[in-house]
Image (cartoon, rainbow, N blue to C red):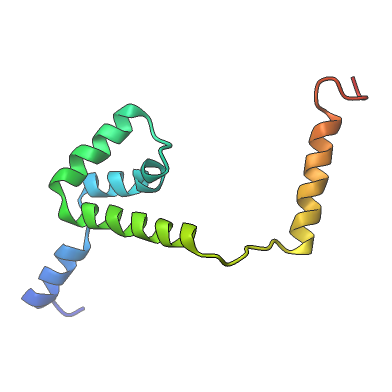
Length: 102
């Protein structure tokens, strides 16, 4: 295996994430959706304040989600999926408290 040139090493170093970045990136989707604990949110906020790469990742994620929310394209589930959801919904109601099965 050939040794990496200095420019390849630099590019590789920039492409790898620190353990802190990896931890924050794992929380980022849930953080943006407001689904993390206060401690996790504080961890993300503190890291993003200091890390440009993670701050850019958060900004890109927020922009992507905003663009998805603003699209007017209908999202249609397949017939098979709709039937499966209906089956699960009805099965859940059959087992619900106060149903005829009680």
